[in-house]
Amino acid sequence: MSAPADRVRVVSTTEDSNPRTSDIDVVDSLTALRMLNAEDARVPGAVAAALPALAGLVDAAVDRVARGGRVHYFGAGTSGRLGVLDAAELLPTFGIQDGVVVAHQAGGARAFVHAVENAEDDLSGDGAVAVTSGDVVVGLAASGRTPYVEAALRAGRAAGAVTALVTANPQAPLLPLADHRIVTDTGPEAIAGSTRLKAGSALKLVLNSFSTVLMVRLGHTYRNLMVDMRPTNAKLRGRSVALLQEATGAAEADCERALDVCGDIKSAVVYLLGAPVDLAGVRAALAAGGGHVRAALAALAAR
Image 1 (cartoon, helix red, strand yellow):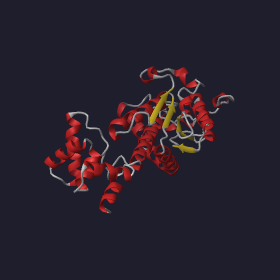
Image 2 (image 1 turned 90 degrees about the vertical axis):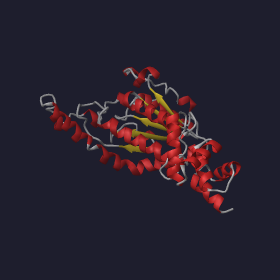
Image 3 (image 1 turned 60 degrees about the horizontal axis):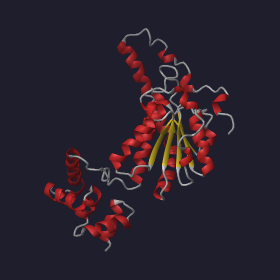
Image 4 (image 1 turned 180 degrees about the horizontal axis):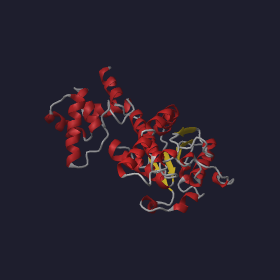
């Protein structure tokens, strides 16, 4: 492998001193909080500027995942932890199979709750060996120069995977390794170099947006409702029934009965809105529609 990108000294804009907060250590608490809030207000605009590039990544991921591929997040420190959080929340929210979106954190599980600062220099690309040509590799690096992320992007390219970099640094050295370049230029942090602040907030928004639209495009919602949510406890069972009522306008008792018959929310929506139809017909319609409720209902209406 060639020399890591950060062996050449490249300073990220996140590490610059921010003149707007230079007196944060001498002002009162409310003023300090207002300084932080004013910096945070810059985040949505930075994310908005990156949306066209992010849309391209979503489309590429939809294509790969629909054909059996996976999405891999690779990151260190705060960036890696946000990737872990995003991936973990997709399973209960959208009912996807474990392993469709996988997060790799430099330093492993210990780094989720402890700082393992030297882990970001790991060039092994832990987890990248599992990447295939049908996958998507998303590097998460506020500075855009993390060796751990570099190794993953290089391994992804070598495997023929789609590669992407999410960074807060417009001059990120790793950008040439990415097919999709998601740059949220949040500028200098309120505390120089503390990318758990604006850069981390921007990354959280980017990951939320990316994975949510990916799930929507793959058919895990009907309208804006989570029809693949898993009703695994009493609270979620009640929420599922309420969701069915919202989606179909059916009475609570009918929604309870449909959920019992079908076993999952998505099938129950089609069962109620596509009536008269039996469970076998529901399953066939969903299969024909690629798991999308609207397509399944259109298939039933065309019979």
